[in-house]
Amino acid sequence: MKAIFLVQHSYEIGEFEETKIIGIYSTREKAEIVIEQYKCKQGFKDYPNCFYVSEYKIDKNHWEDGFVTL
Image 1 (cartoon, rainbow, N blue to C red):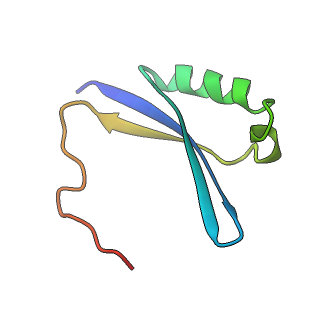
Image 2: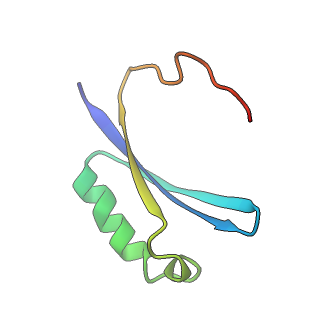
Image 3: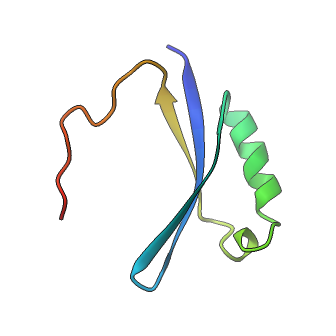
């Protein structure tokens, strides 16, 4: 099954979480290259370890069981 790779940058400031979607890529390798490029950019360089890559299968549902808000 084909997958895509979502790159996000997420960190906490006090009680707030700040998340930015960087992009969606066709391979994990491309996602990792973009992360390396962003690590030196303004703002991102202050939180270099806050990048995340999530793999999503194409044409597959997510959150099928719903969710609970705490």
